[in-house]
Length: 321
Image (tube, rainbow, N blue to C red):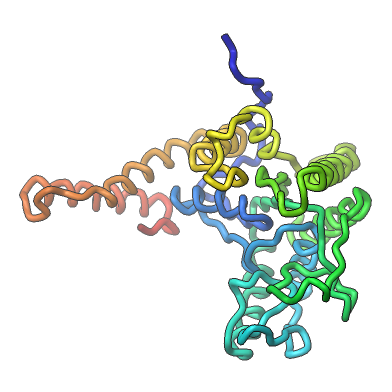
């Protein structure tokens, strides 16, 4: 008896991720779930240099700022609740020091600029189509930083709005890095604070806009823009609350592992999968807690572990444990 509706997935035939790849991940917190896997298996990657960005306009703004090497100044930040903030970035960048925040923003712009230019793969995860516009400047913000709600208007981006943002993002990236593979996905995390119906409408706008863009791109030879169905995997194959954390909103580790394995099957090369097994064995060896750290057996174990690390590093110099 088949107790799942399975989504057909096939390995990407060209340009898969391997240990020579360099990945940039941007978007909602699901990016960090995939990023943690890439970190664990020692792939080169950069995750959310401006922190979590939930909506398309915020991601577009970061890409434009990075490509054009924007220099942030005092006009771009504000003081609230004893910290300096920037409406373009997540609150994890906020700081009690104005100078530190500006230095961080400008450093992250430069880091993102370099990563866009050298990235082999750019993964963009869209979380919501709902945005907040700061009434004083009429600008859509990436994060409200707990500024009072009455200072903002809340809007739902139309499919056309999102389509324009996606087109802008891809154009900016391709102008800097024509060979980058761009993988779009929609976050499986439901934004229920917007409301159940509103969340469904939001996700529908995101999915529709991405596929409209991909349909437009399909006539272009070697368009290098793709869709990975992480949202659909969560909603259809994992249609059960046992795959959620206690808040019943976020995927739990079992669900994250399931979606990662699907991503790996589609996007990670067979050769890289073999190296991942070696990395995994070393990671588990590092985490091993011996009964007797001074025993001869453990010293032999540590030497073998060290030899494995050196062998891997000789093949891939960027790998460090």
